[in-house]
Length: 88
Image 1 (cartoon, helix red, strand yellow):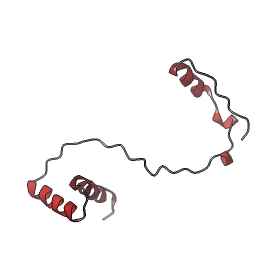
Image 2 (cartoon, one colour):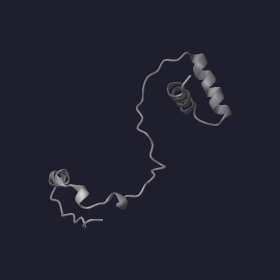
Image 3 (cartoon, one colour):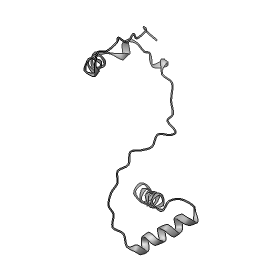
């Protein structure tokens, strides 16, 4: 650590934003100061979509999901992800 970072009391968010925008953190930290961290409970942002599927596909997904004891929508998300991100 090069020198200690002292944070002032901010009147409002604008003042704080201005402070951080002008601060050069390289004056306060060395690369060796940083340690790897993990966020195991961080979930990716999701957004609902509307997707029309034939009923037989939904029924089959529900059957398979029930057999492995997971929600059918989670199973469908896995299938979509697998189809998009695996090389064939």
